Image (cartoon, rainbow, N blue to C red; front, side, top):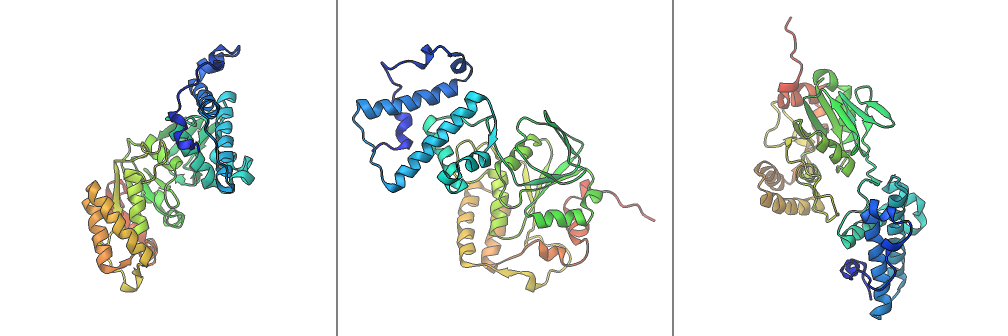
Length: 346
């Protein structure tokens, strides 16, 4: 049986008609990756004929093969037609075939590994779910987006020009925290700080934006729980998945500023605000300890060890519930005092 993961190991077809000899060869010259896709597909088909390989189809792998063929066909079409789409667009074009978005994502990653190159770069856009607000203007061919007017959905800004007068960026974990800070007057207290949320685990689009703004100090405020620590690690070191091409979306300048039980604010947080860790969360803590020990981040490692010892967690809502404006006035004013507006004395 031929596996798609092994297709790239086949030699280019010999003795077959050459794609270079076609009358419309300009496309191949202009786009060598499209030519590479075509050659790899031809090599696969030739191997079935010349080497006597057979595809043993089952109800499970026949669907995978159909998904793989359709995915590479759509990618090839994007390059030939020089159009751009999001992964979500491609999914809805063949929703009945893929069933779930993750199946399309898996096929794209398999194809990248098979070809040894990312054929989607520049043609397949990352549709994000993060938000940004603050002194930032995003200039694209379709117009200018002023993020100071309202929270803006983070799209794929790879080809956009960004202009900002901000001095730093604060990333928060959840949309609820994002909205809470805006309501507490974050933009008035920190007028030169961009506020960003990945709304959970950061997607590629959010990390692309932050990478394009890598000249600015980047701070992260997340829950003191296993997921919050893992999200902080994802921003700084990238994720552990083997997704092709994601390894460069790391933010080495990312600085975790809490929420830390080891450096709790001066005001008292009641013991009832700490929530017990579930069994699955304790397992995650163990895995994160192993990874962070290798990376050598002592601050996050100490936090995880303390979390494991106490067997509980603390969410940012515990701070926001202490008093009106407590997240901005107490927690962030302490952590980001350099970027806060100086209060005028009476």
